[in-house]
Length: 109
Image (cartoon, rainbow, N blue to C red; front, side, top):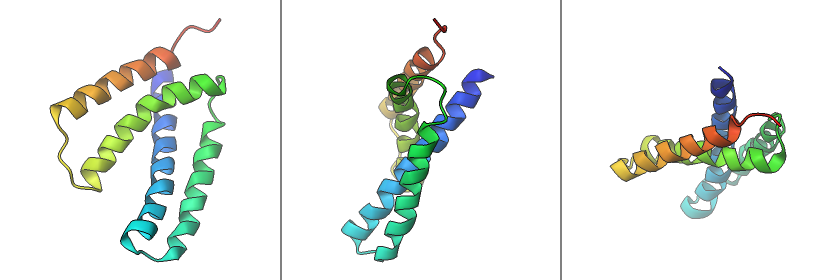
């Protein structure tokens, strides 16, 4: 159960980061309205706040978070960008999740 709670928080955190970066990309690369920068800034602020909710040291949190970020980025690639995932994408995401679990679930010292 602990892993599901940690993983869920990581996945919400990753989504906030990706949205916060995607909206400025739309403004700068696709000429979308500049008002999208406001929700982008709010999303990045949410991302930073969500990282503070993790109970472990910041560096360990960032290391484990990377695994979740990879998976969410690939889901974004599929669902938003419409690009089919390859077996290598899926294998890489699985490895990243294993790495996240090893880091996040290590015994406390």
